[in-house]
Image 1 (cartoon, rainbow, N blue to C red):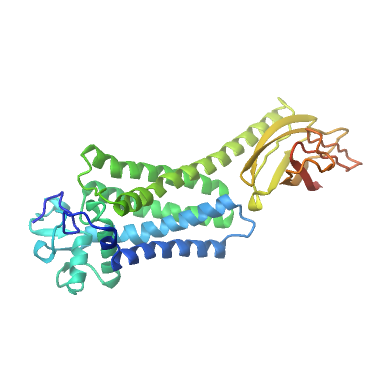
Image 2: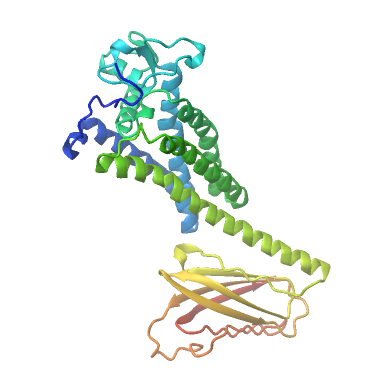
Length: 383
């Protein structure tokens, strides 16, 4: 029979691309797409239309993440714990089971997706060929056997991989669901914290999944062809590196802004500074910017970097509030657009500052944007 380096696919010769695209492979890839479309549909159902694009993307990702953890990785954990059969029932090579796995002598038996797939292939059902398995679990086992062609550890029981997957299914799945719940209900504060915790855990899990394998010479990885190397190993696993890093960036930026605002407010309460809090926040379709001015103030100058239509602009805002006695809160919504035609003599294009003059009795405001930014609309509310 096979050693630990034998391929579960049953052969040592490199497969051609057409040989790799069989019915099971196609169904496996389509099932992943189906989970993605389910996450997209859920976002359409529960998210408000005004939800910023970055939060909508992160909702879809975490919904997809939760479904992957619960359904696909959950089936892997299930088969590792409950599906076993005799080595005689497995056709071709197999991934050997650790000797004293689950506290028993496992000589002559194999566990994991390979056992469930063997039972499903023999039409044995749940009990005839061993423990575990019904039609759905058998189909999911076949899916894992496709992925095991690129990484043999997923065919059977690798103790390090199984240990990581157990906590990934339970903790990662629940945390991803919590993120979706918070984003749907508008609880962005807790959602940001949950995103950072989950993303950090997933990055660590990916590291611990592959680093031991790399240090041991990648004996269980098959990088001999494009599909196994770049689609199964690099692309699918790379998603759980790039997107968690982006989630940390988005959540970390929001938390940083919140702490910055709090520090300004606390300093104002102590009377140690006089300032207006100005915050630029992307809104619908990346075009609406919201500035919140909190607290009575005389002057502030702040530079804000924004991105509109893939172009970065720098707005230096100088706000002067004159003759103000009682103004506690001003909320300004400023809609700006890219104006590349500098020949247009729009009002304010030649001025390099945005200036606000306002007082208690006269609510007239003058706004001027610089370079290629044109003011389209301004509205304000004074409470």
